[in-house]
Structures are given as C-alpha cells and as structure tokens.
Length: 231
Image 1: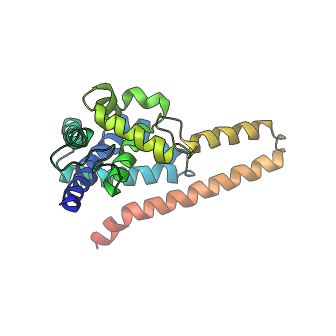
Image 2: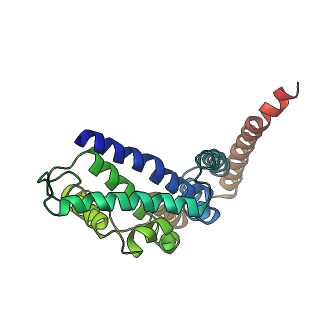
Image 3: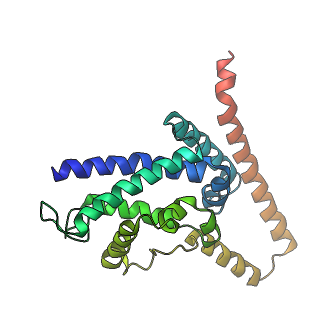
C-alpha cells in the first residue's frame, strides 16, 4: 500500500508540478527572460546562446499547451494542487495516526524516494537568482502564502539532515555558479595584459568565423524542412 501511495505522489509531482515549473520558466515571458534564457546565455557561446533557448522554448510551449497548462493561472492551479496534497500527507505523519507511523518524512522516520524527489523539486523552485526572487511566483506560492508550513518544515529537515554538509547546495536562493564564474573570468581578463593590435584582429576574426558557422548551421536546421517539403 505504501509503494502504491508513494508512486501516486511521485506521478503527481513529476507531471503537474513539473509542467507548472516549465510554464513559469519557459513559457511565461517574464519567467523566460529572468530564469530560462539567462541559464543558457551565460553558458553557451554566440550564436548558440540565442538559438538553443529559442528551440527549447518552442518545444516546451508545445508541451505545456498540449497538457493544458499553457497559461499562468493553469500552472499556478496545478502547483497549488500538488503543494496541498503533499501538505496534507505530511500532516498525517506529524502526529500518530491509525497506522501508528509518525515521523519527519512522508512515511515515518525513514525517508523514501518520494522524500528525495519532493525535496529536489522544492529546492529547484527556491534555488533561483536573488534578483528574480520577487518574480518567482512558484516560490511565493510555496513560501509567501503561509499555507504549506509542513512542506517547508519538511524541506528544511531534509536539507539539514542530508544536504547541509554539501556547500554547493543552499536552501536559500543564491546566484548560479555559471554567472559567478563568468563575472570572475571577466574581472581576470580586465586585469590581464592588454592584447596587441594583431592579437585583437586575430581574436575578432575567430569570433566572426564562429558566429558565421553557427548562424549558417542554425539557418540550415530551421529552413531545411521547408526546402525539402516544397520539393
């Protein structure tokens, strides 16, 4: 019975909550500009940092619209439904019930795959850059509403028991490492010895060549189906 209940909750989290996150970070215009696109802009070279997010967003839009979560209201409703179901389940283990199982996790004293999955989703929602915290309505719905104290307490317990020693993970939102490393790299470049005129021309030529090849590849991928389809 426990395995069946855990599987049902896992399916709920990995479908509805996942789709709500995708809608917020990839379909919603504001979320895409603040979270989705910057994660690739700082990690990929030009023009891939423009083309790859565009392609991924098109695919995610088709996915969430097909699933009926294409609007922010629908996504927020899905997320709230999942949060409430998890909150209700944690309430049953907060005090002894008919089955006598009481503990800090979903099925008592011992964490299961469900606990690890739920924690992973919660910390993903909360682990966003500080400057977009106020625009993260998923986090606001989870933390700011005050409706899900058991869920927040669960995440804190799991974090302190199993993750706190890992300095790469924080329950509080922090700036992504890729952005920090990029800023550090730029600062190091500014402190480095200035390039000669010949080195600057060589660097510019390399960048133009990379952009030209990337642009040609992007155009080929975009228009190839139309060319072959018209023949």
